[in-house]
Length: 166
Image (cartoon, one colour):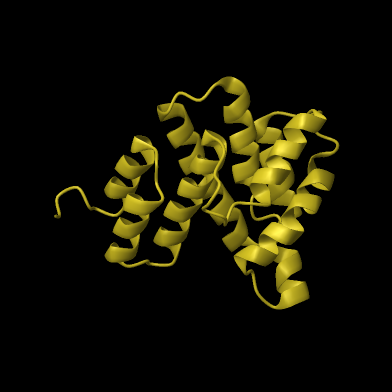
């Protein structure tokens, strides 16, 4: 399947939950943009984009099962769900396992072992910060301590209007 077909499948999976759909589209857009600016190779770009589209696949289940979408619950439940979700996409077992790993770690900021994981964390943060009106200090702190790519830092500064402020 292409990225567009996986996107279509994930939108259908989301069953009309506009908030969830808007969020993963926003994360995917930021992730795709950062990855292209960072010149990721085609394979890593593909895996990252699939992970960005599916990173919150467990949200609906978590709402039902736990009454919330706590990040740790998403990670615990998401890896298995995404393996099943991607099983008929034509992706290799290795590709699916990497996506499952990323989905299962998208709220974990330590031990980051690849640009795909780093960019997913950065893109998800930018989307969450804009959706939830994080404070300027929170954004600056994340940019300084967690963001590693210059593209994400530049994008976040532009999104939050931080270029012309000290």
